[in-house]
Length: 265
Ligand code: NDP
Image (cartoon, rainbow, N blue to C red):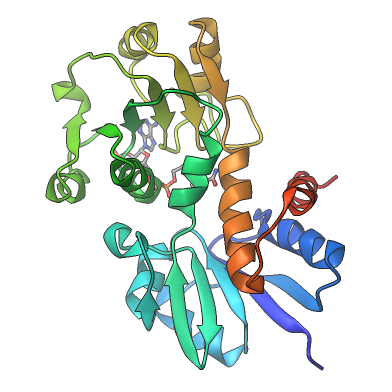
């Protein structure tokens, strides 16, 4: 049997939309491949599980992206800076790793024009990928986080960063919510009055959360900003992984097939 097998590793992984996204594209292109969910508790066993299951490629999600980076035989591109990866490819018995969240984010904000100055709320794994993707594009980035414990990474990369208490209001073209505030609740990623002031001085708002309009996006809309949720970021990180898996360049029909797959349509 020559069917190629792909998987997404995570804990939890049940909620992941990646299988439906990739399987719809495999089917559409008549590729003999299947993409599965792989629940993995112990991140230290990631590479071993990947190789033992004879997967051709994989995606890696919360909380294993840093472990995935450490265990890879070779890391390509901006992932070396981010120190976290979401994509594995097997090549000549070696594990090659990529981060497609960073370029996926850049692709997702392409509809926002003239973005030169960005405020990123949050300092977790997603904030690292976003801030470094923007920095590589020579876009001015500022990171603000609730606490200061996660700011060291950004300081080392010469990215301006503050905790809530030290943050001073400024003009930003785009404000990005990369925190998990709003994911399962109606919380804002920052104090409301402060966020309203930020919005009064900006044009666009982007939330990494997808599938719902968060309190962050509702407030941004109320203040007249153009807004976008995280669906395209998820779609494009998946699309870029799919291109690596299949060694192809996906056209628009594949993009739309994957979008439908992701939406369960
Ligand atoms: P992490 O756990 O690494 O980081 C979470 C960050 O959120 C921390 O900076 C934390 O601050 C902050 N935070 C959590 N709760 C609150 C709150 N109530 N108020 C303010 N700040 C808060 O998470 P990730 O970076 O992995 O993921 C972040 C979000 O991005 C998630 O919602 C995830 O679903 C989404 N995501 C979307 C993707 C997409 O493709 N659309 C891809 C990847 C992630 P502190 O340091 O103070 O605790």
